[in-house]
Length: 478
Image (cartoon, rainbow, N blue to C red; front, side, top):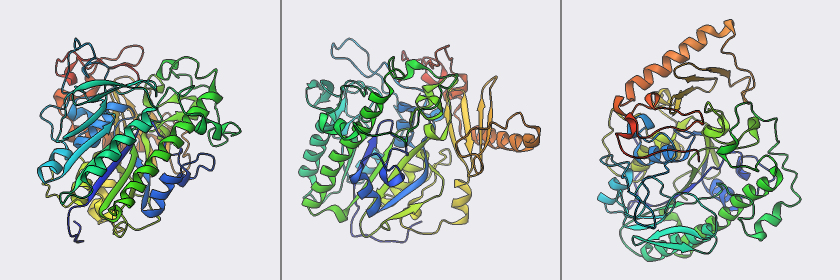
């Protein structure tokens, strides 16, 4: 537990990107992509080099960040297509997280004013939920960057401007309205960037920055034998360079607008009172492993590090050590207890939840042995595909029939050589399998268990099954 004291609960600005790989960051070592403001957050605070999403696809990962639950506890196993609501008023809405506690509800009950600007994509986009009183969200979760369907005060607005700018403008208004208050504020800024579409969807000022880029940091490998073109749309492979320009431009445009948020906090004189966190819902492959996409870029779904690792930056001047890097392995399911502890919110850990707070790591404290033991392994799931990952080994099990994978991450960090059929590593594979199955047995809610979800030949999971609790909701590839 932290022993540090503070005069009041800090303000919190939580910035969430959509489909940003950790490689797409200047501070992470990419010399081609322009991210001066994200690099600024890293320079002023801490960058985690081994932060993992809970599931390598949008909605499940976001639900896990919010609730601290794994997909086989909250029941969302894939991208949500239905249940968000529709402009016609004819589409039903579904509260997918009904009855499940979110950290924003804890914050709201302890005096925080909570606002959301951007992507929600967890059902019923028309109704503020989970302690949020300010609610400006994307109706569906994804669209063109222009003329995006946005919900304000329960009504649909078609936003003609570049949606990254519109989301930022709304976030700035929230900051302006709460900066002078005694009560702390929490603001989620959930961008749709840098998710597709990439071609002809971003301001020329940003695409021009990459017209002469060689993209050597993003080499195009031969197509993966299980690559699904439908995961990113037709034309991606044929127009790879244009897609790379669009992806990099989307990141840099988002970075520009994040800079506006940082500047506004400084203008109000509250930067030192505010924790700023940046991460992404899942990783992303732009040609890595011969894939465009994340976990659903292949069928069967994949658990490559490029799909399950995400950038994670946290800055709070005077509290988090500036320019620091933490190499400990942590997961999105650790975020809820971490944020609440950091904010000084009393929180009784639920033994049914897998996460452990890493607030001490944020403050530069050495992790306790017990805490390190919890962080030795991280786990992921995507429907019937599950992963156990240590610093040295990765084991992927696909229920019920495989194929399974075993990688020595210390010697083969790019996951080129699957050792699962090598008899030399049979014992290692069995140990990792036991570890994985024992962990999931400990935490899975049988009524939500993802390995029982029907899977179609296109890699789609059916949320109308057990984990969907009988709701008329369906999942599709993002």
